[in-house]
Length: 170
Image 1 (cartoon, rainbow, N blue to C red):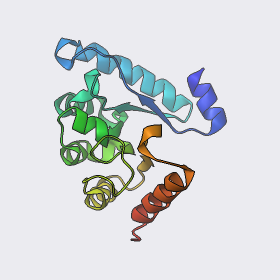
Image 2 (cartoon, rainbow, N blue to C red; image 1 turned 135 degrees about the horizontal axis):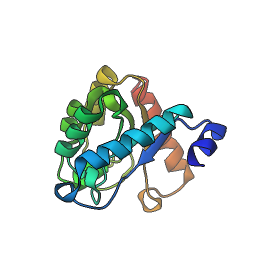
Image 3 (spheres, one colour; image 1 turned 45 degrees about the vertical axis):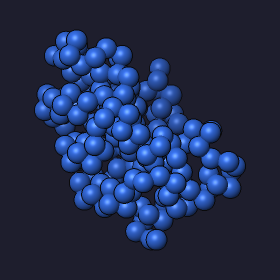
């Protein structure tokens, strides 16, 4: 039903957090087999199934995601969430370099947990440059919680700033 709804809405990426079991306790072969089956089903609807790195889930660590990439080949697609990488003690740049062209979507949130662009200390321009080199068709979203911005004008300004940075404007 999800994929049918996504197809009707024109959605292209199904973001999967995965389970909440530590990677060391997971039957990885079973996890990867089930992900592959889900990815194949999604593909039949024109939807990419992508594993997001989430601090509280099996997908928190880069080593797990690299195993997943190697096991699944072209069906390994990822959502790189910058704030979740930081929460997990992972380097977002190392994740970008390790998962490279398998990244289909990025959730941006400055260090400090979902701060607007420029309010934190993340080297976002350098990140975007590397991302464009390895995954040029990757989509990027500014992920802010309600507490992360004061009003719609600030949200709109951040959208414009993000769009300009992606397009190479300052």
